[in-house]
Length: 241
Length: 241
Image (cartoon, rainbow over all chains, first blue to last red):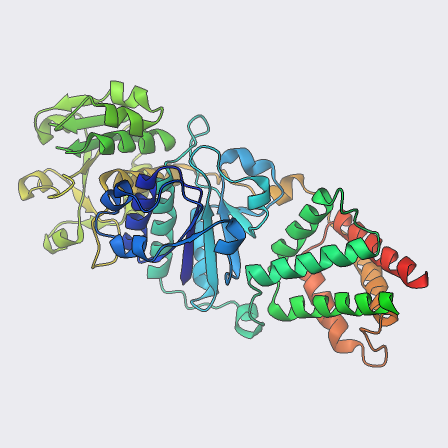
């Protein structure tokens, strides 16, 4: 199991420290911070309570896609309000089992939103599935560090049970495309769609959102991305003749 | 399920607030504090983040036995170092299932130790069993609020006999494309791929097999088929110009 924890624009450095401590307790080490308000910060170090190595090796980036480079699977943690989205939704336990089954060679990112406002729809669109931590409806917002703790705990718990059964499709299939490969493909698709006047670049949003959702859902392999990019390149070439 | 959370001599009022928030998220309300260093305290209120009702109704007592009055079962949370004790030891999940099975008429206390030093042997002796949150050995001390969060999460999860989380894609999404719609789409795709010389109609088999597998795997909706057919039609039109 190889998991990267991504915190999106955390406001409170204390929560970064709490996340680092929770990660270290559960054997996780890879922390990415998207545009944190204050970091490094004394509050983060205090709350990390000995998980300084995780804070020191944390990678700070400017935008969410930069935190997803190299990841085959992306889960977004999501509050109840986002349930309306047509997205595969799973519990932390289900996600942990999926990630455990995917094995150590597959890199997974788990994305956490801002303390107050969560993730935007554009940010949610980068994920293959959403994780919802079950809570009572009337008080559903977990503290950020606590949410990381629950997910990290489930991941560690899942890693303790030995899973002898391997999905056959995992055994034989091609490696999964990374988030950046998928993004490049979607960029290419968008360009070709514009060239054939299928996509209006003035109003691209809804169509590209739908297509992103579609291609995220399937969890594409590298070979599939390459095939479809080859098709797009052939279209481009034919148009120029 | 009727559960009382007992914090033993918490040093940091922030942790009391974090515990209250975690409890409220997971539908627990009964908090007992054994001789807290500072309570009430602004840090507790801030970290409770809206769970003020739990702080306000918290019962402060002088010694652990006073916090256990009326409880049929007592679980102590325990770090790895206490595993040597000859005590029934269970995971949070096992404890949550036991408590759930005991039903609502049985009152259970779950006792948490001090931030630095945990519970004394004398205090542990009041419990019927110990709960150990699994962690890596080299960094096994959870934050107090985080420990309450994990236990409260497991209790809530166990109480959900019906899984609350339903895959939204099942509930709200577009109808699934029929096999014939999918076949027509793949026929169209194959034709356009031939037109742009991406597909050799003399040797189409392997590529089209792969693409069929891809589009079958995702379970396409009618809308998605229509979008991709629209794209293909736009390509066809552009090629004729």
